[in-house]
Amino acid sequence: MWKGIGTQKMKQSYKNQGVTLEELKNHWSSLAPENNIANLKSKNISIFLSESDMVIPFYCGKKLLDKIETLKYNHFYEINKSLGHNLTSLLFYLNPKKFLFHK
Image (cartoon, rainbow, N blue to C red; front, side):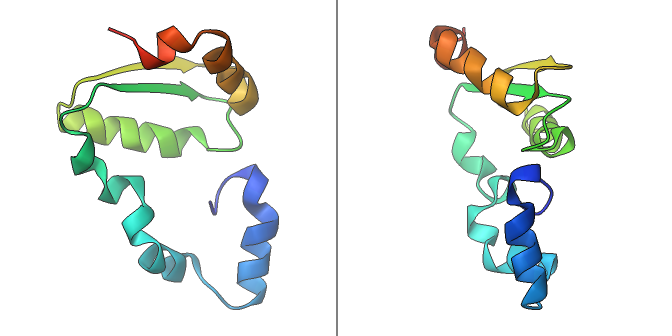
């Protein structure tokens, strides 16, 4: 939330109120993907990342992918270089079987 382009107004509002990133991380820790990754152990995971994503920065998604790979969870991933967040999402809507039912 702190890094994406779509949430910068929210970030500035929090900063104006004196709320720090560390405070948000502590308060919202139960929602963070890295704190819920154990729930994915028995799931088939598909991850689609874009290196040019400015909504969810690539390094954030890659960090989660790296953790899933380290844990050796069943997963599939694709990384595109230039589609960004919206066009990567559009691919989901145009071809849901690739995203939801990948074998």
